[in-house]
Image (cartoon, rainbow, N blue to C red):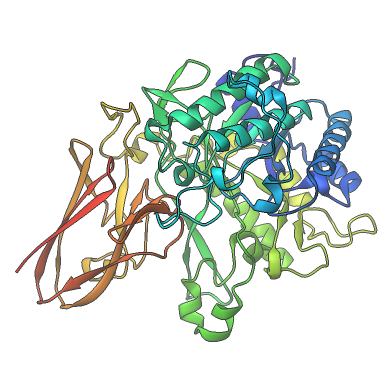
Length: 508
């Protein structure tokens, strides 16, 4: 029996089999070189195709979209029926995608409501104005948004998709007290998958280190993009990867307590090349702007081929050694926006050929690494206990939500206390859990001046807050001022994870 065999249940060893053969295959269901993509998938031994289907702002009409994703799934599963295809339900909605869709009667029935003859109401899906959310961000505490998430998830299941990436889940759950809304939708999709999925099981991840409610993880595994540190003493745009936090523990959806759930890293995309940074910043300044003024996959795609091969090798070994529960989703297909050469504006793992004229040529390297496997380095991995932080396994008594193990103060003040500027992962400015949902850090600022700071939960940039922007945001922007009026000022900062309140006390 294959290690990838499952039906109705997926023990951890089966889940890890798939994650250890994972790729980011963004929109492969729309690929113009699908036959060659399948050749690469079979050659390398990939078994989990992340981000294989989804929408982001007016890609195409709804029915055409689902026709294409179903046809692609059929073709891929005909080549290898073991493969898991992942669909995406993101943290952004757009009017042109939502309003043309009529709500099927089965959506109302699933929610125990009488059917209505109407279309989805886009405005009813969003957060109220002026609360700090993106204009296009759905509020999962609202029933219309729950309708939309359930509708799309169920349609993907019917097309043969068995996994879901739920995007930046800590953003659209900001008003979802106790995460009851998202838990309801995921529970409904799990129940539907139990009856109708290809192998009677669907799995979920999101950009999160942990989402545990009353001791039980809402997600099957956690996922995040890599974090980097730029190098200046090597020629070119060199960087190294940095360990950020860990995957939280809890009772898995399979009902088994896990000290740490599996974790999946990826090269993320969010816009390609930052032309302003490349045109206006010095070499040293641009090093700190995302990945040298690129998003992650665009930076990778714009390195020489030999360097791309080396960085895949580095990413694979780094993951095996730095996170014993971690795996790396190799980039099979990923959008590179304005950051790449080629008309299709995608990075493709494929070797360039008449069948894939814009291939970047890393298929042999990925085949080599997957054939070697993570176990070649796991025995050298750092012990998982080294990844534990304060506030472990502490749940909010009212909602049951688990508090983050790692909370970091970051911003322009950090170099003055011995840390790296804007390092959301710093151990130097990590806050300490002091009980009652609160985290605290004290430090001395030796020089007067105006600085900025924010709070990063789990040590990432996917769920940050600040005094002037308490609604969670993603990225390094939006920090609040930290005014130091005299040299050698003692600063104490308290963060309440329940209310997102930040209190600053200074003493001279």
